[in-house]
Length: 116
Image (cartoon, rainbow, N blue to C red; front, side, top):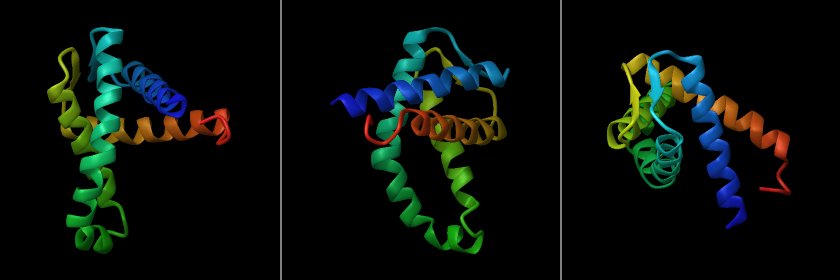
């Protein structure tokens, strides 16, 4: 349970940071960021693996670069589902998802594997 809460906090902090980096990604409240982080975790845990398997041939042909588009689309889906969290366009979603991933990796590395 503790690891789940830490990962949720890391994702929420990454989303908060991304809202400050990109003008076209907005969150009206901390609650919207927390809900978006929770939903993004659920989507990444259950829907993303299925999509990656279905798009495996495209991913193989693009040497994995198609995964960036999948991540952006999933972030856009989360933005559509969460009131108070919005993303202006597709490319903003793709670059926003890339930044969320990089920030999450950096924060997870700072915390260390034994604490997560």
